[in-house]
Image (tube, rainbow, N blue to C red):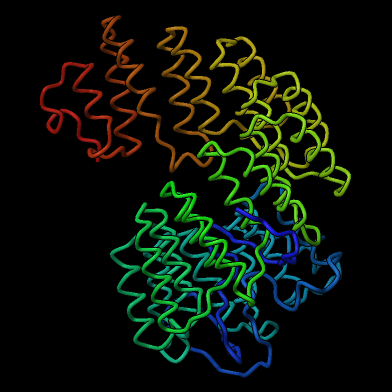
Length: 512
């Protein structure tokens, strides 16, 4: 494979969710007012702005100082339950008049770091001030996406149905399609895509890219090829995202030749410049397929395509070099990263620590963890979980407990995963009661609504119950699983049948 350095950098990169911008090509945007209940009514006004760049819009090119101040105050709230509205109200009480482009930029940043609840609250604050803020169809699309992420698909569908038909343009349909794909709801995504075809909304790459993402998630890589063929037959120009997904599909099929064939087509397409994600995608599959020389070549090309002040490529470089076991390159990129940016976000520290641990560089990982503890602006338990998990895996449970205590003392609020890691340590030491206590803490930790214990840990605890004849602990575990709503089609019932002597699982293990 020949990778030519003459290909110029491209500023856009593939986002796996394809949801950072839901704007579709349009010559105009409509001004709308969004009531929160009843059928939504709108007054329509034209705007000359055109949005179709999968990422940035005109307000992003303005100075960052004012919006960044608002963003930091919202994102760093000590008590998020107070809500973003209270922060914005306080800012205006201090004499600062907040503008729409500032809030739109704040929303984009909140979405970037997956703080969807806060982003939705910002929009709801604007919705309640219709005399000040003009909301366009692109704003509706973003709100629909946020509603899906925060309140679920059913709420997003209700939101969509309450919109007047005259407002439901390609962006609104695209937002709902993206929500279905995010939830892997093929049965709803495919009919909606067909509606978009019939309405003439599927005449550009974005809906095809979203659907290709769905089939990637489902492991149906052949359908990606079919959609690419449809785009070509309909004279729909593939964009960088289309090619990157296509590359990933070929790589997922284990076909180096197929992946390289797509890359050659990409280079011949005069409207396309491979971006850093192109090379990170190819490097990922070269590593997976054991072709480290080709992977390293891709990573060198990736490095030349870092543009502006984009941090994400550094995270990928560090992670991929870590997967290759190249400690020298991991540290080189890390030091380069720190020289470019005065501060490193938690994601950066997560990338370097996880890479070092994969290479067994525990001393280096501990050193950077200590550095993070001094530099962090917010505590992210996932970073501490990396070290805790490594300690437990290596049988260093005392160090895991010590780190857990340090996390709590340092202001960290242990999440469900943290408690489960601690439980794994107790399971390894056959401390059934302590492990069960950790499970109970995990079930009541903040954000535990979606937590489910790993089946392997449930199986191990049931094994301990059986060996010790501990019926009380077994019943306590069953009750906890019932409270968590673990469904019957998962592996928990089979584990119960195997280790607890329950013959009729359906009768004895009603979890829902």
